[in-house]
Image (cartoon, rainbow over all chains, first blue to last red; front, top):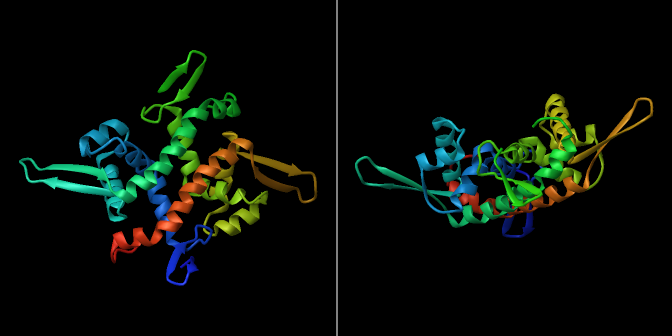
Length: 126
Length: 126
């Protein structure tokens, strides 16, 4: 399983182990749309259409799938309001807010250091 | 371009903007193999075969492509030693070490919180 026993009663993941489920969870939160969804939900609850517009380049199918995975993992809370047509809202859970903080630090580093990366790339387009 | 001028002479990226190159760089460092390569190079220089063995599930072609992208972005330094057969080593650059710190924090969170995610998933396999 690629799990390490740190304390007798507690198992944690081990990303170094190819079979460890922590790699799958890492893939979910670092997936192309997963990361952007988690970052955008930091600013508060969003409806599906809002997320899709802000991300700007994701298909309805891919965004639906991304949100379902993040909901299954416990990072995103999906709330359906009994209206006609039904209103569906997405928000970060406490766990989602925690992981999103790490993604935000990573994203801020990339934003701030983009000129260094572009300089390293020389004329090579991204 | 999705670039924000913070100071007159400095442009930074804007991950909120669909066309911003910072999204592409974020994709590179959060790609399935990109993240694992950056994490593994934190422990020091590695040869291609060592990286491939430690990652455990990546094809030669995908690892080659991953390393080339990270080298182009300035995160990884590739050194070829004039031996027969040539020895090729990969190491983090200063910029690579910086971004890898953020990935390590994210990875540690995922490892430590894997039991919470598994609990949220109930019986649903990853």
